[in-house]
Image (cartoon, rainbow, N blue to C red; front, side, top):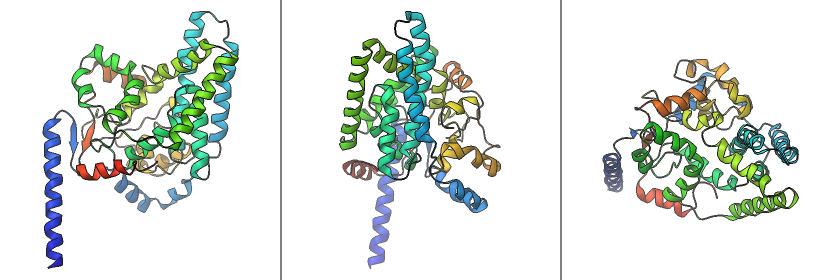
Length: 352
């Protein structure tokens, strides 16, 4: 009797999930929809079964903290050197130097969100806040919370806020509008989570905000408002229409149907903690960026034969001019009932 009752309950649960899935697909038919779980969990196990030697590459990269400290110091030196520079020099350096370095720091935050820069969670949190300082805008603490859910629930409707909204897909469909969308990417990355999957701030958000405010005020006190703008505008440039920002599109936008994660094997990986090795990263999120090329080297049959990129600039260009690619070009899935999503949100998400 007990077993029969469980079977009926399970059927009811499946029927609720299927009903919600059907409703969501009907309401947003222009996205790609997958009807299975995110692919990287099973890929990881399959690859490890064939290549157990990959386990030795798992763990932290002790050089990350030195890279973060160096580039934060470099940004401060830039403020000093550029004092009094003509506006065109300032603007050029803001786009090229500040934009590239601050985007690099967002990817340091990404690396540290996976606890790959030091032993223990707390040191990684503080290192991420250090990387966040020259950006001028608090982001490290919230990024970690949402990014962990992006990995565990890749493509999950409502939960994975990396996916554009229905409105973005509807509005940014033409070439001029997609150019605007690329320019406004930092705005969407900041506001989209608040609109789709808001979370109550935790003490780490408040620590993060306090550190950024103190840093920004110090910059204004020592150098001036112009220098703070150099950092903040550099962040917006670097996350907008900028070569290194090509990874935002390259990672998960479906430019080859049937595949939802793509890798990039080009020189800009040198500036981005190898985030271009994105299939490798999602397969092995506990392997640092430094060692991701080794994943491809050891298991080439899983990476070389599938579509990948060699130019983020080309990815941006294709996205803008190809009428078949838009913010709708993302894979979504429904593997959680609404009540499960609500329960996850009530707990504060996977990470607080």
